[in-house]
Length: 416
Image (cartoon, rainbow, N blue to C red; front, top):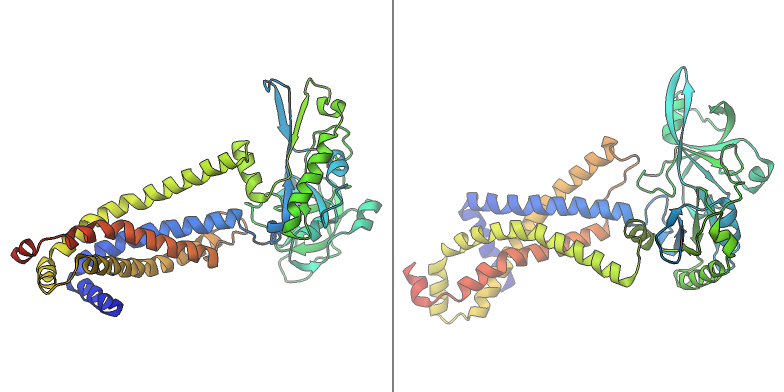
């Protein structure tokens, strides 16, 4: 029966090329935009290079100081000293890495200025992340203790600063802000959307101008806490919260009138919500998902409503077919399912075109340089979302016409 419905749907598509073009154009355009959007969201929030371990990583990115009435507040990254005392000291994690938020500086080659994004890290940073070393190796604890002037640079900076002749640059010198550093490694760069790993050049935190020796609570450092297993995340949070609860009032005040300190160790998604909504509670998550669902429903609903009219016109032409089938005893339920399956078949054809279009657009975005080191893909997650969207879209645009025609009376259908 299903095969027959699909054959009928194919014959209907060939019967009226104009209606077919309008239908497939609307479906393909809508699904293309949704697939590209789903790919970007996956690129932003998913576990991708060089943060493949996001599922078992907690992030500490800021501290909030406020008073009891919450009328005065100060929020931002913590100092290296504070992170060392309350994050590095944790016993449950596998590793704890400290790194600065990326900063900005300049370097010059042959009189030409190169703008650089910079990041200061500890040795554990290279364990907590999964950078691909194209040359050399990362700096280690001994380099940091010695205060060695060594750096890890990206392949893009290598091409800009050194002659692009394919020769290795490990051991060569690079001058940044009048200080000469030795290149110890070259990595494939991280996309700019991954703010905790993105940079052009990586320094040991003991390098000049890192300000890691600041004694106050606030600074420019964040922490990535790598658990041995995802099951340990709850225990790590509990251990960290217990440590924060013991922070002395004098540290919280930090020379001001603050009495309350809020510091959270969150998963990447929870930290993303907390950064933009200042709240990662269950209620806020429900609101976030509800808004996303409503936006998607509206986005799919508007073109679906237009396609309803096209589908009604297409199905009305088959009124006599419906009348004959009803006259020979076809139940309304069978007709309803026939038209739904036909519409789903057409939707999946449009989805096929959308998949091709989305792949071309994503390839264009990746190669355009709009997003540094962009690696948008249509992976299994994005493909599954796309299939689900096709199903929803097919139902939205097909159920109403199918229901209307399945209820058509035999006499009215045969008169049409």
